[in-house]
Length: 135
Image (cartoon, rainbow, N blue to C red; front, top):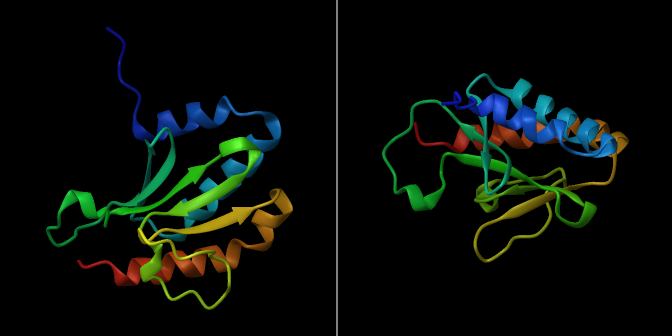
């Protein structure tokens, strides 16, 4: 029986199977997110790399997705970072787009240069979000 891959190995495997251009962009986004805080972990969620808060939290209903921070969406060649409950974040940078009725916010990336240019704002948004988590 084959050994199950760890969450990190599953994300790495997913990224390795992307085309070369997407692979570099997704790997860069991954490193920016994981380097923001040691309590951010990764997994495959909704068939894409997802990032969640791994620290202690007050009890909550799992359907509220309070632990889930963001998930990558690579639909139709676009690279988007979906923040399932991102509407709670007061983003003054203009990085996040939309306020969907279900509470989602989205960050679009055009290419690797766009990711690199948004690194500081992305890390600030993540830090704001982490400060809102009920621990």
